[in-house]
Structures are given as structure tokens and as C-alpha cells.
Length: 545
Image 1 (tube, one colour):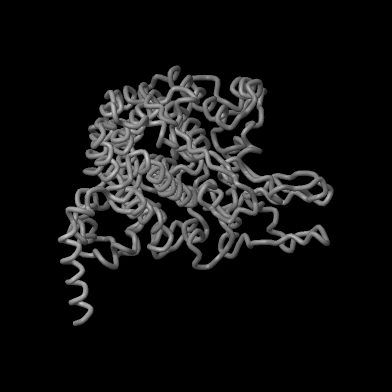
Image 2 (cartoon, rainbow, N blue to C red):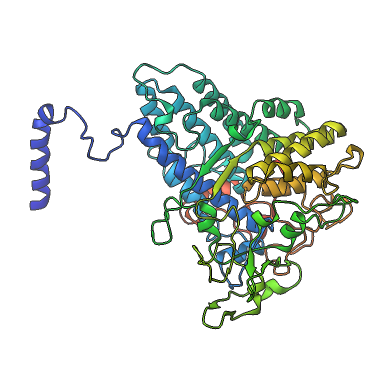
């Protein structure tokens, strides 16, 4: 009782003094009103990138770009067996909702106070991007009520509804970015750590996202191919118009992971390259372009790691064959003994993806050269012109405009080669080789989509494409090497029969995050009645039905 009376007494004192001391917010004390738009934007971008790229890592395991060392019950190991559960898919949900999405409205409010329209526009694009991406992997999620004050069990919205909201948000963002800012508004460059204040890049990003999301509906009767092409024509057209996160390498002794590349963190030392990914890179799949002028893809050594033998000669990693049975007990992790210059396990042929040693001396054995995506200071290729060129190629191909499709297919390959910093002479040689289709009449949808699969490595969009194209299955869902698009993409040997009891079952969505299952199950089941079923993750989402 004494404590209660004491608090009440203090409240009276503070209330009586309010007119004297409560004039301004203390800029050194955190609250919901002090941070300005330019202070709010950098952490919002960082947290969005975490949610987005972490979704991409999980999609890479499901999409058989990445394998992982054996660990019964391990989160990433489960993902490679197509099991998404509350443990291995919870982080993108938490990172988006808790760290990013709830900070969009406060940023917009802060921006509107000073007519910082460009900040408001960027915030709307990030909100659209995050919700559009996650709705397509989870299928259902809270949108309308996710940040409603007083509602602790928000209703879940169907992804189709969320896409309508997302497309409208992108239009709003574009309109805001085209406005003239107020006289007191900070320059966008002051807080934009992603596109460095280039409003044109943000506008192009918004149009590119519209093309991406609209293209997801390619199998629906109301699909509007021209709307996709129109949006793509206003998206990124060149390397300098891409939206790319440049991560920072602060050195091997820095313990903070705040600035390092997400794929460096997420793949760690347990991830491995799959045989499927290696085969796609080396043009080793049914129907791959072949001829008298074959040339190895110059991206191979940028995208897969190599390891030196005892004589110092580099050898590329072997790819993990997801269908061979090795994944039932391997590949196992390994260690290196510098004294004997040997590895303790034969599975060292499956090379780790982090550069090891971090800074090798002339006498150190190279245990891994690493990859361009998994360096500590890698670039996060969030949205690039390469993706749009492949979208155009797909649409033109479906419209039987093979000449236009071939040009867009080659432009997509070139755009990604440039991003990989391949020398111009090698780019020209490769694009002219027989390893790239040169005859419009011979171009296939597989040629286009497999090249897009390479160009969008570690992107959540790859999994959207795989589901949209029905993997390498026929209309009945059976693996079919003749009619299937992603040649060689088969069920992994360790696929969980409880979740995928039939040969026609394929991964279609993430499981619902545990936070919602534990605390909001009533709303979950209203939107997704089968969410508690083991094979829920094989249920198609709206644009696949």
C-alpha cells in the first residue's frame, strides 16, 4: 500500500509540474515520437533485409540450391527434406512483424510532419515488398489488423487480398516519390542506406515489384501479361538501377554480425551446394543448349566453392545429390588438421561455403574459396534488372514471340554476368557460345527458367517460380522429365512421408509461425482450417490453385 500511495503522490507532483517540464521531448530519451524520418529509415531497411534474405535462405534449401550437413532434427536439414515447421520458419515472421513492419507507420507519421514525401514513399514500398513476399510463402497472415492498437489476436488475411493491398501501396509509394518535398524535409540520401537517395531507383523498384507480383498470377484466367510487361518496362533496366544491399566486412576479429552479409551468416559452415545447382551451372540437364562451340559458364567459380588438395591444386566442390540417399545420414561435417594437412572425413569433398582461412597466408591450404553470395562483405541482390528480363522472356515465350523471348533471355544472362563482375570479353564469348541458346526456334521454357534460377540464387522468388511452374511435374503432379520445367528437380531421398505422403505432393507454403499457433490459433484456423495438419505445407496457395 505504501508503494501505491508513493506512486500516486509522484503522479500528482508530475501532473502539477507538467506545464513547466513537458514542453519538448528529450532527444536523448527513446520514445515513439523523438526519432525523425531519416533516423528511422536505416534500421527499417536493415530489418527488412534480414527478413527478406532470411526468407531467401530458407527458400534456397527448399529449392534445392542448398544442401546441409546431416543433423537429425536440425532446422536447415528439415528444410532440405521439405519440412517447414514452426522452428525453421519463425525468424522471417518475427523479424518482419516485430522488427520491421511495426515501424513503417511511425516512419510515415514522422515523414508527414515535415512533408518528407520521399521517406513516406520508401516506407510504403518496403511495407508492400515485405508483405507481398511473406504472404506468398505463408499463404495467410495478418495484414489489416497486424498493428491495430488493442488487438492482440489479429485476424489473418488471404494472400490474394494482401496482394491487392500491396499493389495499391506500390502506386502510393511511386506517387510520393514523385512529389516535391517540403522545405524542412531531409534529403532522402540522409537516411537511405539502400539506394543512396536515388528516387528513380526506388520508383523503378516499385514497378519491378509490381511486375513480379503480377507475374505470380500467370496460371490464373485473369492474368494480364501486358500489365506485367508495362510494369517491367518501368523497372530497373541497367546495373546502376538495381536495388542492392552492400554488406560490410569489418574483419575476422570483429564479433558483431550487424553489418555482415545475411547469406554469410545464414549459410554458416553447414550449408553445401547441391548437385542440381551444380548441374544447372555447368549446363548439365535435359534439353540444355549444346553445340560445337560450348563454353563453361564464367560464373561457376563465383557461385560454387573450391578446395585445395595437399599439393595446393584447387578442386571444385562436389554437389550433394539430393536423390541418392546420402541425405539420410550425410553429408557429415568435417574438420581440418593443419599438422597433418588432412581432413578427418571423406565428405570434405562437399566444400564449406565460407572462405577458409579468412585471410590465408602463402603457406596456408585453401580449405574453401567461398562464393560471391556468402562472403562477409557480399552484396544482397534484392531486386535486379536480370529478373525483369527473365520475366519478359517467359511472357514472350508463352506468347510464341520466340525472337523477343530469346533476346530477353540473353539480356537476363548478361545482366547477371555483369553483376558477378565477369570481364566483358568473357561475357561476350559466353553469350555467343553454344552453351547459350542462339536459335529462337529451339528456345525452351526450361532454358529461360533455369537461367533465372541461377540469376536469382538465394532469392525467395526462386521458390515462387518453382511452385508456379509445378517443379518438374506434369499436370497430375508426377515427376515428368519430358514436360516438366525444372529438369532433374526430384523429391529428396529424406522427404518426410508424414508431410508428403504422395508422390504428387510438393512443398507449397511455409508452416504458420509458432507465435500464432500458440497465441492466436482461433484466427489461424479461421483463415487456414488445415493449418494443424501435417500435410498443410503441401497445400497450394492462391495463385497456384
